[in-house]
Length: 376
Image 1 (cartoon, one colour):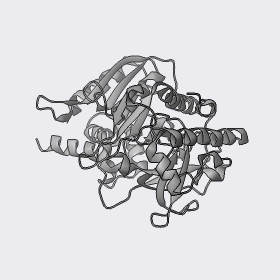
Image 2 (cartoon, helix red, strand yellow):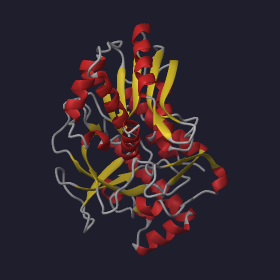
Image 3 (cartoon, rainbow, N blue to C red):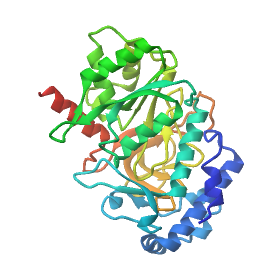
Image 4 (spheres, rainbow, N blue to C red):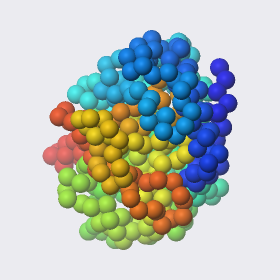
């Protein structure tokens, strides 16, 4: 299989600066993947025929908007493949919705492309370092959750700074239930502070917030100035406590000594897999290898910047599965104002989940673990 334009757009060195040539490359890459999935996945063949869509017709930026979408809910019930399953080198699952989990598969080349997307994004944002770094991972231990997407993603972050020591604070107990080892996490963080190396505190926002709450009535911890706080998995566990993102960041700066510009939230969707991370101004940019479209939930018409709707996510890296255009259940809007950070790519703001069925994402599951620990 040869996808030269997909390979090229996933490896651009400054994905947050959109250029005319980059955008043309994105269009060509979407055409490559759309044609491939149309020819190799019966479900996509049927979907495209239903909407009378010819994948060869993708020739402009506007044509990307016409690609028929696959809904995330469908992916929880059907395994859609464009390559034989034995070609998969990595299989991950989402956190599940009422017991239903999405399986996400990657062949070797597709995995290399999405890894490149993450690499070039982190490089442009200045998140790559050659300094030995200690990691406090407030997330599921990947040795015990090796197929869970959030566990893989957080572990994957450790390739951007050499590991001095890494500690995972969420592990299974003797009964097989997940436990957040709060006291051990605090003790490890204090030990890391004494060592004088940069520290990367990384994990699900709910666990990070509980750690900050634990530290509130103790002596603050002063971490190395090159330390980072990297959150992900959603904000629900914190927002349920009426905590704003700005309050959260100010609290973290006061208790950990991490500069505001070194606090970054990440956004991801197992079914989409392409990365997004806040810039130093705490805005989510759309890398040139991705597109985010906002659609009216009833008409599916595109909405202008500032108007909230369902997120459609487009990325042309995965040949294994037809995840080129995915309609999520997340609500968001495209920002009207240009980001002051200097990158020219569009930005978006996430509102939350839509729909009548509550999607049991990582943040909600994290909140349940915290509540269980407090009831002991």
